[in-house]
Image (cartoon, rainbow, N blue to C red; front, side, top):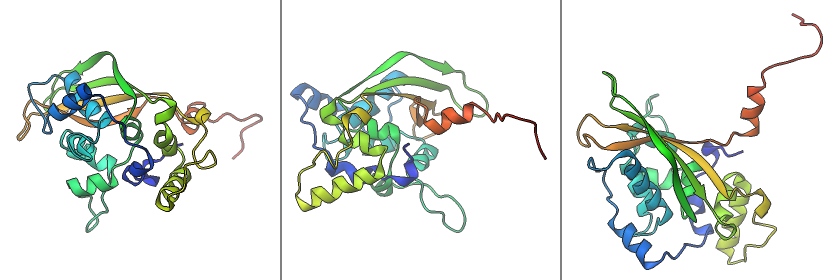
Length: 235
């Protein structure tokens, strides 16, 4: 199963051919706001982030990942790109570090994906004295077989290394290197958790706290079974 700490998403960017979007999609990607916008509702904020990652190379290289950095809470950035501790404490994440080290299942699925769609209506919870409004948005991400090399490599870091070695050597990506299509997820579902900001510099804007996969790993499914043993208990 995928482990974000074992895999740096940026290391696989060149192992997957960049998609060439239609002119309308290119125009849309060029107009997406790079900074959080308080005039957008929570669904629109999620669409800005997802569309930017879908067309990550527009209007410039890694624009989608850069935009994601600006649309995330400081804690969310740390979850995607944990920095090394300094003097025993966890520090914040700078943009350059985020671009180099960000990794995660949702980020990997959305980057250059075939398409995505929001599922149902957002669930919005009222603000409290401790925080602004909270919301969750469900997102389905689709990757067609021709676009799945990177998505499959997310679950197999060793495959990612083999892909990179082949690219550096100018060798073709053979079936022996690429994970089988049968092992690739064509649809992945994620829950986006966001918070509406109550403090400068982005008062009123929705920022992403985290995006969690809804698909459970075998270990998670096993843990839900609990501990059941046959025979008497022993000390």
